[in-house]
Image (cartoon, rainbow, N blue to C red):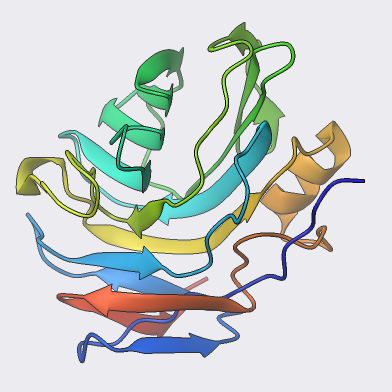
Length: 222
């Protein structure tokens, strides 16, 4: 039986203190461009991961590279990473290796991404706005280490640091979730629609976080 973690929540304030609350209908606003700010996620996997899914929603007008979700361990800074190097492309990393997914260069709008992976087959899934891209293979048989340092809005170059402001995120972010299993297609679509979801490792409605720098919590504009 798969281990299920209790959902924990991310909340932001400029005071750089840990917090926890329901962030339904709220967003993190990374106000500066470029930015040295980030949000630390406090809920960590207790066991190594053989499967996972990460979902989040972001809104930005950036055209330069930026990191969204960075999961680093002491042995690998890009253990799990969701990175957008330019408009029209996402890169997802596992164990320091990456896959690229070409996406439309749409007009300014929210983008919801889900990145799922299973070790047994090496299958990696990438979903954008509730639509699956062709599945690819990466790191079959690999195990993602526990003991991670997880941040939003930056790319870690080493465990807990090494941030480059050129790769920082500026804009709005919401609906951040992580599960220790690969979501079914039905639940991938549910994540995009913000409907009922399985219990999770990191969940927007009950997630522990710590703000570092100029990030504020505001109500959604939509």
